[in-house]
Image (cartoon, rainbow, N blue to C red; front, side, top):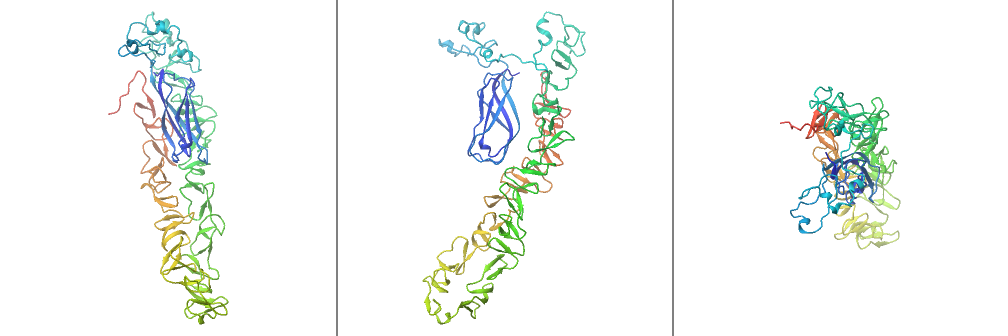
Amino acid sequence: EIRFLEHVQCKVTLRFFPRGNLRMLLTSPMGTTSTLLFERPRDVVSSNFDDWPFLSVHFWGEKVEGRWTLQIINAGNRHVNQPGILRKWQLIFYGTAVNPIRLRSSQGSPLAQGSEAFAFPSSSPGVYGGSGDIFSQPAFANLPNIFSAAGSEPEGSVATLKGDRPPEMSESAGMEGRMVQHTCDPECDSQGCYGKGPTQCVACRHYRLDNTCVSRCPPRSFPNQGAVCWPCHESCETCAGAGQDSCLTCAPAHLRVTDLAVCLRQCPEGYIENSDEGTCIPCEANCASCQDRPDHCTACEHHLVMFENKCYAACPMYTFETDDYRCMPCHSSCETCSGPGESECITCRSGRMSLGNSCYTVCPDSYYTDKKRKECMHCPTGCATCNSATCLTCEVGFTLNKKGKCVREGSSQCSPDQFFSGSRCEPCHSSCDSCHGAAANHCLSCSGQLLLEEAACVGTCSAGHYPELSQCVRCLHQCSQCVSRINCTACRAGLQLQSGECRATCAQGYYSDVGVCAKCYLSCKTCSGPRRDQCVSCPLGWQLAGGECHPECPEGFYMSSFGCQKCHHYCRTCKGEGPLECTSCPPHYMLDGGLCMECLSSQYYDPPT
């Protein structure tokens, strides 16, 4: 029995991003508040708190009974996209049956050294090296009992199922001098009784209800560890414990949340209602909310995107991601895109060529089709139509020479480093070896070691170009930087870099890490990050449980029609939802008809060998 607290452990299961924004406070029935968790600006991890234990301080010597309040506050500065969900919380109390605040013994005690010592008074006998009651000493005569003053008298707390205080158990105070009989009510155990009837038992054979021994506890109650019938939580019709998460069946007008064993008046976010069964069924893994079916998502976990009511690590081909993390279709000409319009393409579907942000089946005039690049490339200067670098017809003022190039009319009378201005030959810019005008960006070829880039001569190629022979060639339209035509080093926005290629989506088994494809954990088919618990989908035949992929449902999960579902927290392993489907129990619990129970106070735990 715990009558005086030392500390409290609070186990919390919740979903919130960014979790570093959270501050958690726990307030005791005496009004003492302990901070369990401070906000942490650098904690931007996307994973949940799943049964995370947080340790309290400040509750030394207080009582357990009463209302405990958990406050969870969004106290951080980081942006929050969607509300969090508190799935469950549990308090575990550590303490003693006697007051832990005592005077030291005379050995090494301040009293032995002639100095005054102080101890908190208690209604329990003191521990002191001398004889008699230390609290009867004159020094304590006028000192009030702090527990009485705080409304927290340290004595056993017993209540009826109605919540009021019953008469003394078995009226033992008035029976101490009475004879014990052995012809007793069937509900009395072998210790006998003080008279006739189930209210006169020394101890009960089965369970005690208020002042009466009974064969079983009535509805809306359960037998505690001391075989006393205690009331269920108000939301439970039948239960296995006093907590809200110990319901076996629900009170009228309540729905049972199958994986949490709690009863609520309406299903929380992340669940759908099965009105025929009166239950709330959890949405499938990766769904933040769903409708009609567990696999019909209406919102996804914050690091995922939704397409056709399914949640994915990235939008599939032919779609783009919207500001609300949904995947919408591109224009029919686009393979990838930044929006729905035909001029918002990033890459093109098979058989189409890219030009600007549009895709063409036939390139417009002054452009030719480059099938290797899958682009419409501009014809050389002066060409009206061309086939690759060879001009077929020329623009007005140009004439086609024998090399398949269009040159200005009259330029044949000029030297190679000159151009014909219409009346005479003029010198090219000093950087040009040949040209079609006087400006620095009118070069046709370059002098010395310079490279020709977009009709200008440069020492080194600019970003988005790579050197090839004596020219700077523009990178593929998917690339923002490259070292050759087939080796990109950075991609346009919306594309992912993988093995030198800019792709619409990362290959299976990879995830996007700021535009670069990185490998998933080896058991994941697709994922949202590198850790083993960041899988989004699994290889064929493997099961997703708690973000991890397993050959079969791991310990603590069971197989349902929608994949691995978590067992009730009473169970170590189970075969179905709820606290009655356990197949094995945590240490110090015994299995009884599918339910994991603590041993009664008259029993001890005998671990299996």
